Image (tube, rainbow, N blue to C red; front, side):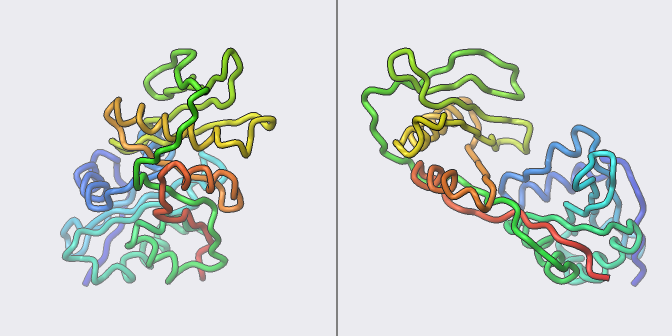
Length: 243
């Protein structure tokens, strides 16, 4: 079996990327790296046949190309994943690895070829409709923004803002990544979860699917998202390549 890995253009692997995203059926948090030119793409060929691809970006600096963060093989070639991934690491020479645990193929490779693996973030998917009630609170949008950043949403009690935030749509469709901020005087009073509940409705109304993430040590954000109907769907892992 001859494995050949060569640098290629993004357009070459677009059909395979579509399969990767469709088969995974999750928000891929680094999807925008391709769109913004932050990544290099490597084509995998086995015995002269297109078999898959790998993608590399900079873990700490966008201009660097030191981290494998995406890896896809067509189904007939997946029994050769370890051999292909080993060759990808050799050709690219990267020192770092990164993956989402709900990306099962790359996760297996990171566990096999990585060391010092740590969880950086918790990934959330919507699980249920919460039924939180705060009769005195109004949810709305105070200011407009462009399509890539649907910001300016807030909770108000009278003229006072109790929570603000919005959602980003520069990820793989249909997923939208939500964010929020609750000022310190209003935390631990339920405003965050209620804001997330109402923002989820707005995200669905606009044709997207709500997603979220938070740092693994941010227990307050985790509790807020779970209370508003999200569930943990994975972790964002990073580590070093074992040489």
